[in-house]
Length: 203
Image 1 (cartoon, rainbow, N blue to C red):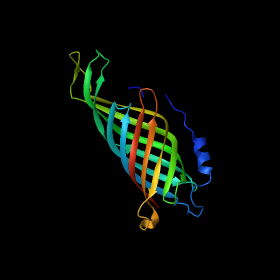
Image 2: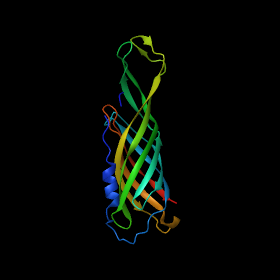
Image 3: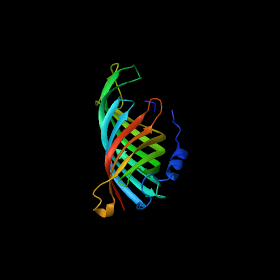
Image 4: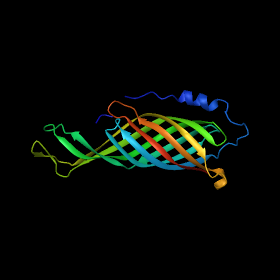
């Protein structure tokens, strides 16, 4: 698998973060740090492989509307068919899974209402996938030396989502429901995107 880089648009997010808030001006700034855990419903190459894993996000707020985030994810696999190239082309069935996802993002957000915020993300990510075929599979009658392999690719990332306040009477109003869609890689032969829903705790 070959994992084209789509240019990121950090300047646009910075402009949006600096724009006047669309909600009441007396909304208090959020806490400086936060963490979230969510599902990671990923898709490789527009349906070639699809599965669900888990994602952890750690964030540091820089201002009321601007933050930096570190994303980490893993898990989930799908049964796929790959073609060997040596010594002769042979179709090989196996499981393709997400071994590791790491990304660093700039996040801009702005209020829609007092309870709802819209946010956008741009950043850079590294994705590592692993293929495991049946042990001892052969190609053209010749046993291959390994039954699996891993490959990683890096590139620009972008996405966006919504955040909702939930159970505002608990945890000092720091609990939020998040939903987002992020394209972690957008390169020829290596588009990797994910839809995530989870809980975020500000502290």
